[in-house]
Length: 599
Image: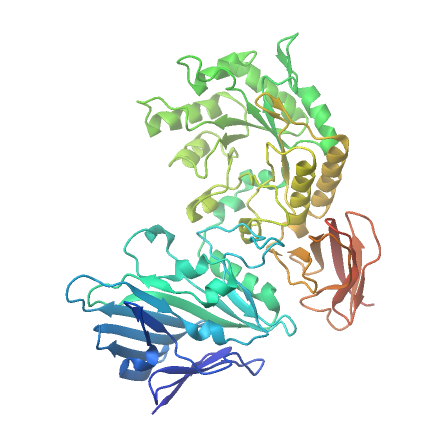
């Protein structure tokens, strides 16, 4: 037997062993399309500058293994010149085929550098467009249009833009082993941002002596609805093994709709009256109405005196007019206006002898003595161990907010909010779309003038709240009247369409029909509404067909199109699924689609 095949409901792999191991087909079953344009070896090793393709390895075993539950195609190979052992297996797993390469060597003295190439990708259909994990869609300058997270690497996809058919590849990654003698090279493939580099990769392996170790693991599956299908499948895989119980706690749900934060420097004239020596909360909140109103007030009270003497951050509560009771008076005034209050914790302000238990008790004391609604963790991407539980034991409903994006999966599960401090366009952060329940208002403290305009566009583009920060510890960087009006309008739109923007399904980089366009999509859980944030990154207008609807309207279904940001009415639907219109350069449009059954 020289021909070997393995398949699931979506995809089929075919191998030939007549003249050494060769992959002769990757067949997409639903669309009846062959994705491999020519037969090729599944891998090439390079040792001391010499290439050894798979077909020069001795095939010691080739068999299809199966029982009632599992099915796998296994090839065991050996390269006598260097005594390198190799195993290639392709197994059926749920909705994918798992392509696993394992290798090991019997080094006589010291190990040699071994490089791996997987040529399969180079022979995918020429009509396929590559969406890399680290750069699924480049901006006009070539840099990624999506900020990524090392705990949640995106799939790599090859998709035909004309048919929307393609192949999706998920590569499991183990970031906790980065920098160790780790043989799995998936991370190198995941980090590549250029398709030429990806197709011509040469991965340095660290082969163990004798024992086989995983060097590459790729989960292949089929696509019929473009990158949208790929993202939602990947998203489901990520979320199924995570715990979102913190987001379901009734006493923390208020935080999700607190979409506008404001960081107030306590000794800024924005809030502090130097004549009366009082913090004028009502005045601050009145002026905040120009932005649409603040939902959360972060009161920064430790500057400018912190570090001048031996006092620590906890001592500066007493400097607030009225001390602890003064803080409670601020909370009461804010609460009367429906505004919540957070105080900061500064991890870098710690005494040499201050233990974790001391920190937890200081935070606990602050929560216990005041009527604050949350702690804002300055500079932090996680919180001290046990802090969440200690706070809850005192007063449930007090939230924890990180200044920066959570770094690890466990923090995403535990902490329900953070700030996204970026301003470039067209960009977004992948966590916004993987975890829409995680509150992450947009901000960037040092931006001025047109950079503030860009920051507002970024919030609109990504469907997020906003953190207003005008006095950066003495540097007064205000928003102008037009920017305030834009933010007020955006808050009204965001709250009016909250269940669509923050439904369980949303995705970045929705497929487009024009390269100049970038689109993010948001879906109501009922399936009756969807919103597309459309941005033209070019210097010229884009007219005509803009994007396709997935899924297209069902039989007897009517779609109503409404533009929410500019109010323009030139958008229409053609051929039952193609949205057309005119998008002016460097402008944002919000297209809301409402699906209704015809009566």
